[in-house]
Amino acid sequence: MIGVVSARYEIHPQTLRLYEREGLLCPSRTDGKTRLYSDEDMERLEFILSLTREMGINLAGVEVILNMKRQMQEIRQEMQATLGQYEALLRTHNIDLPRPGANAATSSGLVKLSRQGVRKA
Image (cartoon, rainbow, N blue to C red; front, side):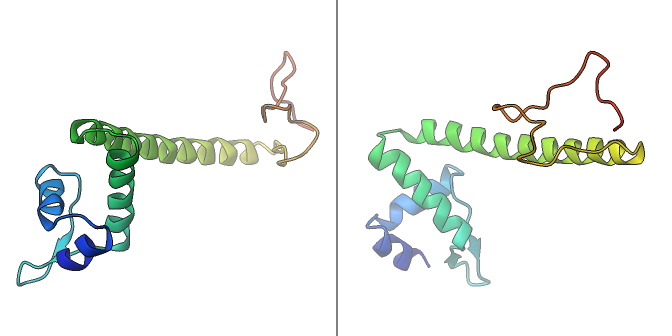
């Protein structure tokens, strides 16, 4: 609830309401319209407070950073899905995938390919 969260983080309840109006926080509500903050909301609030208190970033900057963070998570998910598709494709062609830590990887973690590309072992 808003009183508990504001006391825990030593911020005024109006600050939490402002964050909600600005779209930085979106706590759920009970039927009686009481705000309920989830663990995810609390983590997001801690991140917002670290940006504003420790780094001096204003709310417009916080919004930009939160949007960039969300976009990066979406891109990471897309990359994981694409990687899974490529791995499945390689397996259907019986091409072995290098194991993490195997000698095939360079110090950057990339696999060196021959001029012919990936070859079946």
